[in-house]
Image 1 (cartoon, chains in turn yellow, blue):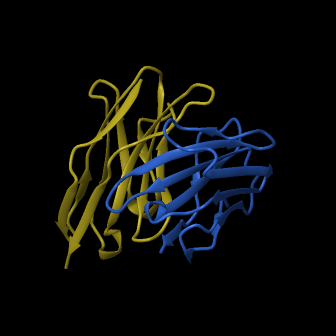
Image 2 (spheres, chains in turn red, cyan):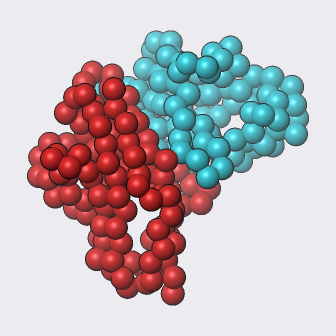
Amino acid sequence: AQSVTQLDSHVSVSEGTPVLLRCNYSSSYSPSLFWYVQHPNKGLQLLLKYTSAATLVKGINGFEAEFKKSETSFHLTKPSAHMSDAAEYFCVVRPNTNAGKSTFGDGTTLTVKP
Amino acid sequence: GAVVSQHPSRVICKSGTSVKIECRSLDFQATTMFWYRQFPKQSLMLMATSNEGSKATYEQGVEKDKFLINHASLTLSTLTVTSAHPEDSSFYICSAETRGTDTQYFGPGTRLTVL
């Protein structure tokens, strides 16, 4: 069994300040973890993924995430928010087994204030 | 690389008609494609998984006779909503991956409105 909890449904930051989007997971198997971003009425774009290599993962657009097994967390961060970062963010867990299905978090809406 | 397209992006149809949505992987071979449904302000709900050349596997509660999925080639899967009703109105998103990898690439979605 697996699950994903995005701890904040909404996060609001000012432009130029750091972003932290929190994600906790549980999985019976060693998981792969992903962060996707979705802009309004668009599909999901892959930001980054963790697949048991380096625990600190760098993604696109300045985002990065750290896999912490002891805390079962995979929080997404960015040092300085940009207006274009305003979107919906999804944390996704997938077990490293054949035909492992992805489980999506409920999403976090990021608002960036000027 | 890893681009997935969907067509149409928006469709409006009358109740009782059928609508076909196409999902294409443009620059890679998609051995597996997934179809999701997303309600406003909600996460994605997996409807079915299709492997190229075989029947789709539907999630519990998804009517396979209503949501027909075909994955006849390594670059194309289609979702047909048969006898559509207003409650089928939603945002439908497909994703695709290559066997042996674990990363799904998503299409831009199709907004279906049934009048």
